[in-house]
Image (cartoon, helix red, strand yellow):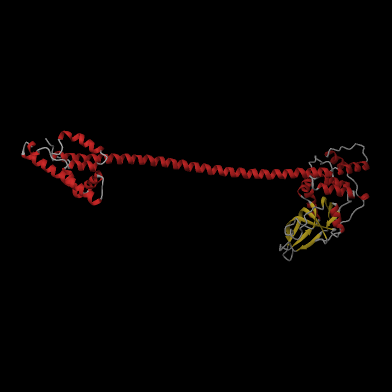
Length: 430
């Protein structure tokens, strides 16, 4: 809280008050509970009339609704009540119940009133019989502004609708003073702010002692007013150093705020990166699982194909060997060994060709015990010959070099179904 502003207000000594107020608006110093101090003890000296009572037309700001401002004693009492007690007043000073050049803090006046410097503060509000009064504390820069002609006080306050005028315009009444502007010409008629001689500005001794004590400078109980003012002036000389230290601390604070903001941003980015990496990890794990499943399926398919190929190769080898035995090219005793050799052969086609080229060494007809056996064997020989011929023809026409694949194709052809069905029970050679 800017309690040094209150010191300036209480002293009412022109230069001392101005210097303290000018520095104090830039400082925040915690104050003790000062409810015992009564600002109204200052009396009427140093107060300025903010507004007379009456109904005043207002055109509205920047296209706002035209209305009537009703300033009466009830409104003044509400303004004063909302400015007190002391604790509320201190809080309001903290949030900026300031004296500006015109009204840079009023909506719609930002461009028209670019000067946002504080030229003083408002230390009190009173509703009197002839109007609303405030107690301003003006800085040296504010004093220069008054000397340049900005000697009228103009209010910026919150107001609420309380009725309707005969011409239909709404009537509004103020209830909360927000700031005061030094202007060349007031919106509501009122007297100019006047400087008061030092001897017309009594000091609130009790509150000054309390405030100096709060700053760590405890006056003697029997100190005179003159000595108290001197002591206060001495304390005021330390304010530039306090201000410099405060500015330095604020600079460091601002740097820390920026650093915290940067670290927060970095932390947010890192969190986003972690989230992205977690998502990518999950995606990769899913892909890995899918790849492992695909690999397992491929291995199953490969084994199934290998088993199928081995089975088909076994059928083809058996057919070839049976045909060779039936035609006398191989003895029946070599059947099992020869079938195994053909299944394991690197080039089945070449091995089948070799068997087909063998010279018959056995007289098959001598082994038949009766005519029916001979017929069955001859039929089996014919079927084997037909299958072998069909496989050779397929290989020639289709350019197939793998005997097993050619055998499978011939077997799958519907026109050969009866032939392979009959081969399922071939006659046994004896």
